[in-house]
Image (cartoon, rainbow, N blue to C red; front, side, top):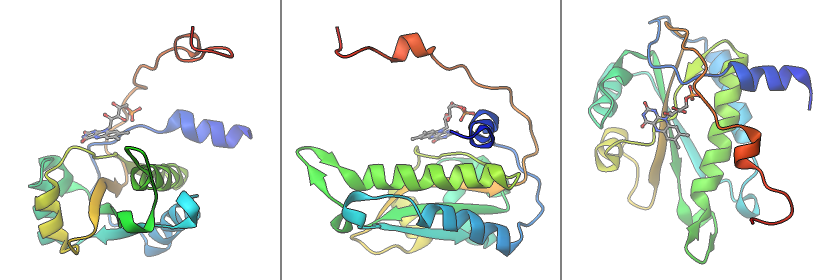
Length: 170
Ligand SMILES: Cc1cc2nc3c(=O)[nH]c(=O)nc-3n(C[C@H](O)[C@H](O)[C@H](O)COP(=O)(O)O)c2cc1C
């Protein structure tokens, strides 16, 4: 794995305070391109990304659970059509598809000097209404996108020895 990539991973933080400066469209496009290239179940690409800059829509999304979101210059909503992904037993793969694409997006944003913050806790119905998504589509995640106005320290992680085992669980 190349060092630059590891550096990107190490540097990334969840950012919850943003400068109001707008983001150049070329940068937004590059960040979305990283999401577009993500792998997915049977290459179904079940995702649609809605890039929100309209203050009224941002406000409505903020009211879905995270008031501070309103102050980000941009919010990206990651939506999924489950019928374009797969299911195995009780696992819905659209969630994984979106998770991978979002992580591509988040790391690409970091590479552009921009902050993001995965938002999983929100009132989906309110987000759906704000975004006008069709009934069959789920709003899986939101992230603000913009230039950070804070520099949080690294949040703790478990050590490798706590999270890795050899050959078998026991
Ligand atoms: C699936 C998922 C859902 C999350 N949902 C929220 C959320 O609703 N609100 C929030 O402020 N942060 C949310 N986060 C951010 C986590 O709190 C954050 O990643 C974690 O505390 C580690 O901090 P770091 O991202 O700065 O390393 C979420 C992260 C993930 C991966």
